[in-house]
Image (cartoon, rainbow, N blue to C red; front, top):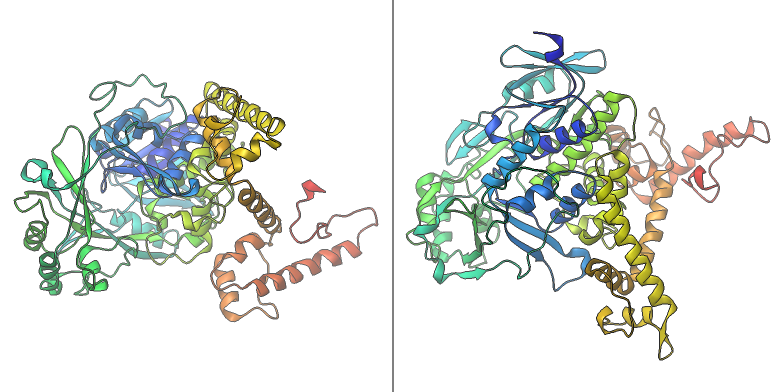
Length: 636
């Protein structure tokens, strides 16, 4: 085959949510990209829940949008129910969530990818990564084709050596209807020597809506004024599937019963989870229904949400009753649910086991440390969820393009900059023993990392990368100008001896209640209300983030010997395994104590002093930065 057809700047393996964002980001940065996927018609498929967003996940989707990714725009085009979760709670934990038409979502993303200049889609299964020295130089497919590349992104989701479990029956498969990728998993072990593990997840049954008694169930309507995920404008000329705006649909709530639990308990011996057939670790926060019955035996009932799978289908997703019990038991379980006594199951539930690469082997660009032009993104890194996968895909795609081009700014996000930064830092520093999912509680600076300010935090970064357009940047600048104007006015004008800013900051303060204030866009007003009321808290978090950056600025040499006096054996083994690049990363490794971080500071400081003592008096190179460990030299 002609080398023009077989060589690409970047090859992306996998057409799921991580692979889509990686391929689009790299191509939009000018790289020539090949996207390899097992089935072109399953690109961006919503294999599990037909929803995007939720607690912390909604933050990630808005961050993806602010950095120039596609998920938010695609979600808005496919949305059939939009809700802002936690409206009654604080701004830091409010999160947007959208039910999507899964077919519209998949088809639009596929069309975006196919029309993207420099991006080429090819249906084939990757079976081997080829290496040359310390670099991955190509990908071999099941057809014997070899595609060479300057960088490779692996985003294989749940497909690596995957097994589907329906009761005590097991079948190879990456999801229902698609084959597993066993050969590629073996190549990662054999050819690249990567350390891998086995995880497990699952999905519930789908049922036909016309067989349900929806009128008897609690109805959950969308927000009265549906919002959008994307800050940016959709300037694509793609045809709208189903009209300019899809109709909004309700969800419904029912509950499991004592009879549901009885059916499960009587069939636990037929569960692959409890009979020892499944060896992979599942997620504690999203257990199978049989796990709920066993672990929470005192609870009489559990919530089950009926979520529409789309405007052009009558299928409903039963959120909350994921199971791997045999199919005859699934019929019994479903028909014990109020309102589902005559339900027809259109698709069975199942569990899936799959291989992952333990992510401590990566750096924060998502490159494999041992193979610096190989990037991993999504569930292969031990995460769960479309949103976590897409966020990683964007980062991996940008950094693969930067590496392949030999120029540009790498995308590394700090814990104080983005939830994506929190997630990636957790992956490379913490023990991943179960599928990882983001929560707002994982972010130390969640008052700074709100979903409403993602564009203010990150859109300039996206524009600098080359992924955010000038018109979108101009809209951001107009918003910033409105916020600055409003803040200045409130701080400079007084009413009854108090500044308007103080009045807004008081409990229950509302911009609309202040006298003589200028007209501002709704988003600017909302931002000012949040900023004023959380001012003291955010100032403390800004100071804490500055302290973190001082530790992040203190680099640990790659060959540093962690066998130092005072460092425990547990801490030394974990430090040697993860090889943290900074003291900040070292401090976040489970089992490394603050006292041991202080000792590391001392041991790292000593060689600097020795270097300084032998240097000329006017040469400060090698001295510890003034003002304490990790002070950036740029701030001297």
